[in-house]
Length: 228
Ligand SMILES: O=C[C@H](O)[C@H](O)[C@H](O)COP(=O)(O)O
Image (cartoon, rainbow, N blue to C red; front, side, top):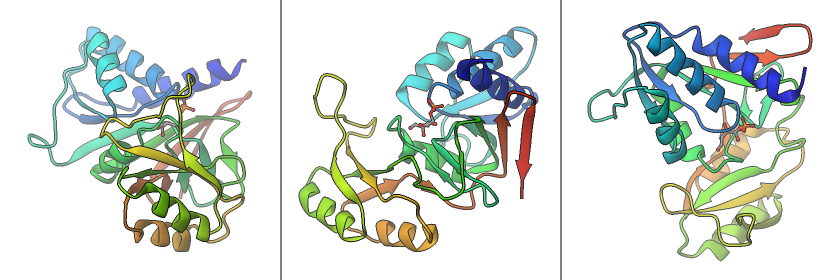
């Protein structure tokens, strides 16, 4: 099976956990898009749900799939949120998210959800967060140079603003910059997370601690379900 097929398998399995009447957080990225597609299929079969998207991109995909959208003004609490991840730490289910730039909205949606189901292919599990992925940090553009210096003082290498493929500055859906911070393996993610959270200019960062309630990992043999 290709990586794409793994993503699709995990995404469809998660979408099949959704039941009528639920308010569903709709994640962002190449795995979450399959979950949105599957929810669209289920709606044509009679499923009745409302979605809160984690990005403009997912909002567009959800609308195309026929998923009715709602917002936090109407629904403060979500029954379930389903999203991809860039890394999943074995044993803790802690995550790095945000290589697609949607981390802040994703964190708000995950925090508001009773269940947060993470869908990944077999390339995403790691022993320590930061092994492969940088930690994306969404920052205000005002004083970003100082914010970047501060992040570097925590051990991040090569901190610079994310750019799009054409070299132009990446701007998040909320109008902010993303600084990708390469820490290497993170031995104490709680301490690092607290330091980044306490840094002026930081809107949110991509370390998600104690948020995932379950992780579906699609491997060659099966879809493993990890829970704490
Ligand atoms: O900002 C993007 C999100 O955190 C994605 O969920 C994450 O990057 C995983 O994306 P993908 O499923 O495309 O690997």
